[in-house]
Image (tube, rainbow over all chains, first blue to last red; front, side, top):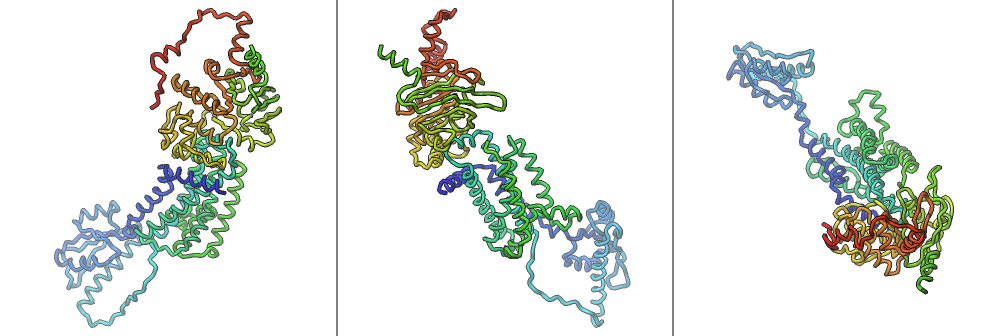
Length: 356
Length: 267
């Protein structure tokens, strides 16, 4: 046991001194979080409304009222220019306030839109504009009886994209460490004769492998602390999870991917053989297991297939724990999936892994 | 005259107590017999060389003795321990330098030697081991930063962490320049003088002549000659062998060394 710890410690030293390992397991996931964290996805959802004001000051009231509507982003310009932008798709709709517009009289504005191509935007723009001009009419006759909508303010948990993303990226990091980390380093140890050299010492292969796994579980803790820490400190991550529950879930996931890593290391003779296999396994999961985007947008059959991906189990499990504060019992389906997978991959690895 | 008698006896049994006994060793790869029933013994404090062309079975013989390859038939005893019966006990009494094997990246020489000591449950003095192979000034370097000769010397240091009775060196000087080669010979001689037995393979005849007490020449999986190098030369000459070239008192290596000096050229 003492030997295993010493070996794990030495491996940790090697791991921390290896630039590539740090890049893949810590910096790359962090980079993804920072990149996606700074892109304001909520900004992308606003309607682009072009405004052509031919009425000068008389149109000002409408524009001022529209500026207060958070659902739209305004662009003012000349008529031909705005219509050209509409054509290009840079504007969703264009509002034309004609020269004869009179806010105090019986008059109208024109909404240029494509109701078939952009039904939602056309309808939304119509409602917003009607509301704005109605308000101007009501202002003229304040005594009219109206039905008012009152807003009652409550605090809700504002889950953001970051809350979805960080547990997903953390799962991805665990997968990369297990599959790429193990497969590449063991193939390299094999190819360079280091395992052979070890096998003329009294160490048992089992102990060496246990030490390697142990070291990676420590790396897993580092990954979790760094990513959750960065999320909480810089991106308002709503972390409510129990760290121990996180760790248990992460370890189960790591077991699955370590199993795959050792299997690949067993069947490959060189790094060139590992790379395509590892990519073949990780890429579909990275894209389809709900790491970056919710699986609910996937077409039915694909969604059902991705339900049994190990990365899906891990990402869903970690997400529930981290964001909803779920307990181990509450994520039993995910844990069950991970256990089945880890039994399968560890069995496969013990069949296929070769010391030389 | 008594010395000659002594030498003759050594030819058969080796010097002193036998630390390595090989009897009818057989190693097959499928239908190919790489080592075909060879026998020899190596005595304590002997430097024993295994020579032979590529594919003769030198490395296979070493690896079978070192527990790296399962033995198909025959018996190998190391310090009285049967390799087939208790390979783990054998691993404790031998030190091995493998052909073309490397060490972990990103650990310094000191850290590596400490780690290798741990593998044997031993606390080693890394600097003393590095002194042994004259690498103390590289104590905190990584193996990657060493030159070829330094790497070979380091793998000898790593093979010494468990204070082994027998040290196995597989082509330790292949690829080294003459200076580094001679330097390594000095290291091997000193290790022997400290009481260890050395078994090595080599392609270099002058190395065998210079360094080995006895050599076994292998071909096609069998030992075709086994004697001290000078003895083998004498036997050949006694059989009427003559060389066409006139024998000089010096060779090209002597020229090379007198021009470039004996000092090590290591970056």
